[in-house]
Length: 207
Length: 221
Ligand SMILES: [Zn+2]
Ligand SMILES: [Zn+2]
Image (cartoon, rainbow over all chains, first blue to last red):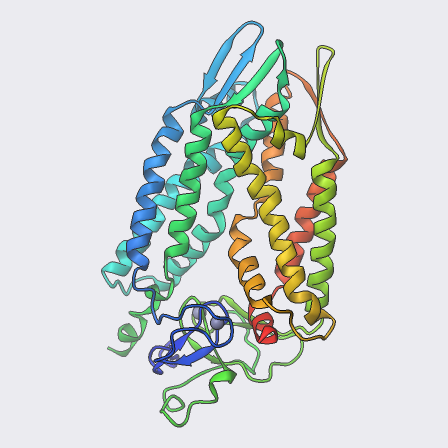
């Protein structure tokens, strides 16, 4: 089906990923937009793994340490991400609990797994499911930023609920390490060169 | 199946023989799968998708530059309103707290809260403003049919790089979650800035839909 297609690399050219312009192989800087040219990003997979591990490591304190510190007249309490989700369920806000749970737990964990799978499949030169893997990559790129919701919630609550003695809310360490985790994972996904998924395509169809 | 405009053809092996390739300037490669396409002379309004992976490659729309610039200007003004007017108001037991985004950012004073405030300010106000300015600077002259400004390429490159880090739309969802979280202990009402911010999100999404990187880089050359 795709055998009639030809890549820039097969035509002996280098494409600029920023503006799409084609160049002869010996050129290293795009003549249109000035971006650095590389037929394939040689350090892509290394950077993907390094940033992914950084994202996973910072995700641990983000879940164990308190995200929110609440002070009221009667009590002082600290809650973690998952604790906040249970509190919302307890108050009957199931829908909002679901949003926080999906954005703060499911999406980050799903992203770790998806990026690792993409990197491994490229390293093994897998020829399977190229369309699905490319879709997965697009989804990961699109959805990753949305994990930031809970960080914003904490920031808004701590700015809004500052009522001297009656009630105050302050951010915990987890808010910061969670934000870091999201940033590392976005950078990891950005480092992935999607062209690597497709490189095995031609051999797959030719043989 | 997607339908592809007839003008976008992929390059076959016969054409790829050293002397038979179309001029390099007529070609475009998919940034995500490297597939070559012939992009010469697309009709007005055509949308070209990659024939292998399906991502949008080119939208040929000559009026888009002016629309992008006017939407970016609108978003810029709305952002200024969104940060300075009251954003949310909290009422509990006779106590009253009204915050604007600017106040929210400058209210923090201890370590972690301050770092968090800087990060949030960056993601929702500073980076979006920087990105809008870069877009207006780079595309403004193109919209008026003038030659690009000096540094326009750098500016547009910056705008592209900043896109994933401009998180205004995520912030709005965060506000909604926060409102419901405090609903139990206090009454919260939204101020004018909340609506400015929501409008800003819509305008930004619309603007980003209209941006065709390929056409802009071509015009900036
Ligand atoms: Zn380029
Ligand atoms: Zn493609």
